[in-house]
Length: 74
Image (tube, rainbow, N blue to C red):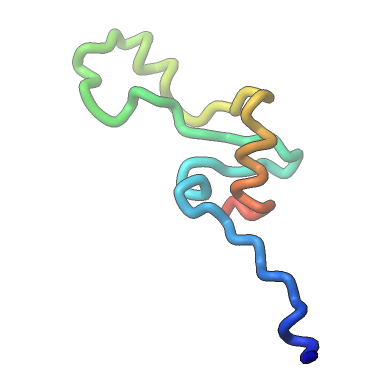
């Protein structure tokens, strides 16, 4: 039997997850806030201000996102 046929296949990165999440150097997961893409005129200035930038993902979801990213966030 050939050596090449016994090699395990590579673990693929989930591209949709990679597009939406990013790993920090310390292993936390950053994501964009929901509710910012459109219909902003209905939101108060305070709501819009709070939605700026990125936020850290809750610890409950981190293991699943890291598995989908396979250690590569970009």
